[in-house]
Image (cartoon, rainbow, N blue to C red; front, side, top):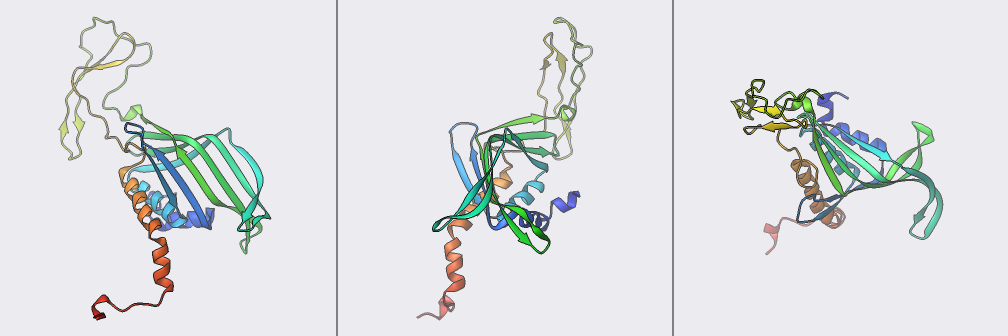
Amino acid sequence: MGFLQRLNPDYWEKQMNDSFMPSGQFKLILWRSDPPAEMKTFELTPPLFARFCAINAQNDVLSMNFVFDGAKERVGIARGPNGPNNVPVYLVDCPNASLIFRFSSGYIVTLRGPVYSQMSLIRTPNHPQGVCKFDIVQFEAKSHEKYLVSSRLPFKLPPAGDLAPANASLQAASSLKIEGDDGSMSGLGKHRPSPDGRVNFDDDVHVPADPVNGFGIPQAAMRCLELTENINVMENLFVYTEQAEPYSPMGTFP
């Protein structure tokens, strides 16, 4: 997938149309990692999920991957308005799933929690034998972890086993110049390996800015999700205005 292609919302809409039923839904439950504890739930239709993915791509996210550890698959029976309708559905449960975001800045953010999905088999002219599409995917991110690729650190880590004695001088220590957001060079600092292999800093050393908020996703993506809440609340109003008799502009009323 080309870089520019990932930035285009149309690309993600096609992916969602290929993967989800028209009435499908991606339900995302996020927990704040730091106090105060807070939970947010977002229910995304395929077009809104496509927009969410596009905004992530536009905010330094290179890839998003689900990893299932101990997933269980089974076949169930769909339920209609009047009860079971004898149509088989395919279910996947995983209590230990991970959603991994990789950023161009070198950060890797992993959201962890259970995932549940349900798929239905449909037949189309392009797939006469049938193809499975998602009815629902639900992921509850109960926690998240952040890592920074060592090659993106503004210094070189000491090799394993190459430890300096506790009273070693700072002859090997080097000053660091870190490029700021405005292109300027700032943040001089020195570091030295300690006897236990850790790196100690004599001055402040700057690393790439944290790419996610307290819920584990980019702030721009969170604003997108919060906007979907308003859209979902107003969905009935949208439908009514399309079906009801059109009204004239308010200025025409006495």
